[in-house]
Image (cartoon, rainbow, N blue to C red):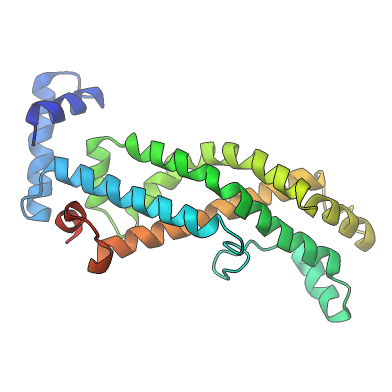
Length: 238
């Protein structure tokens, strides 16, 4: 491990002096060594970044395809409660077609928007400090995912909203919702414009589904030896 490099990284992350960096570096290495059998902070950092990068890429690939959301009962985006109740009431009568259409197209919109997440997640992983990385390595089975979710959700929401809105418009979901509102007398229940109402709901659920699978991948790397496909992953999580 290049001690000078790590000290410089610690200083840039917020330690103001060489002495302070030396002191905290020693504490960090001691803690990681005790818990990981001699693993260095540099190894912990590299392994964590690789694990999260693999998890993020796999999660985006999984959801960013046809039926990535719609075909997966664990993350399929439901209709908002008000619409879902009406859909369940109308379905036995064979009258839920417009809402069924909205439901499908909302999931298609999420699938179309998902690719924009990959770059931002990778940027967040690159921005991790050594202290962050070590804390995540020593944390719970999806502590890295929790960190990423907290760090990226505001920006991801901003990035997801335009493509979700565009996809909802292009797939006809907004128009389908407008028809369903008029046909079923829901104007008093839907206070926002159909596009805004659907997009806000869809973005939140889409991000929840994405992070579900980032967490699944992270947990698998931590617990399943077959998922540790490189020497550094085996060293850090073995």
